[in-house]
Length: 229
Image (cartoon, rainbow, N blue to C red):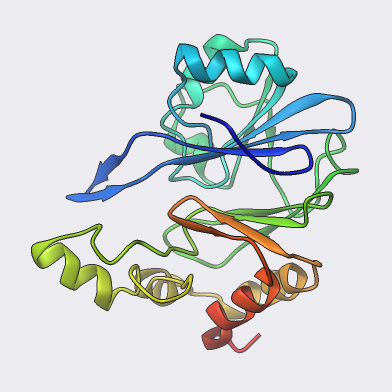
């Protein structure tokens, strides 16, 4: 299930979830830090098979929900790994008071992974404030919902029309129109994107789209050109 995506980084796809009648795939990233502990980004449903693969790579120490929309499987991982710390993006504590969060995610990387991973909070969006991560060793940027690229045949009927109009289906990764409109503070978004575009990114992983394996920096610049960074 886990697929190696570079040095000390793996991806795996989970089941689809339905939101307002639209089916969304799920994807998780696992990073092994310099201290050999594991960083779990956007955890998917935890099966026995996935847990065995994860345990073979190291000890889960950090469970990370990257935005306020990606939280459905956090409790499963907390139960399986009670010693791990769980990190909350902006607004998720209020949305999920049933989840124990140990620390909040901000613009500066947590000391536990600062030597391996950079992070930026893309602020100013009314739908969600997303924490974007950059794994230095594999030169990989992690986006959750602000970038999407569904296959042309993923949706059907009226949903396919809506998805195309929303730019969820496009030749390259794109920011869906609903998220573009939801940026109420574009200056804050520009400042975050300037930091992201400064990363020497070669690869890009999205929760909802095929990974980009080269020139991720160029793909990001084109995807956010409308923002006039």
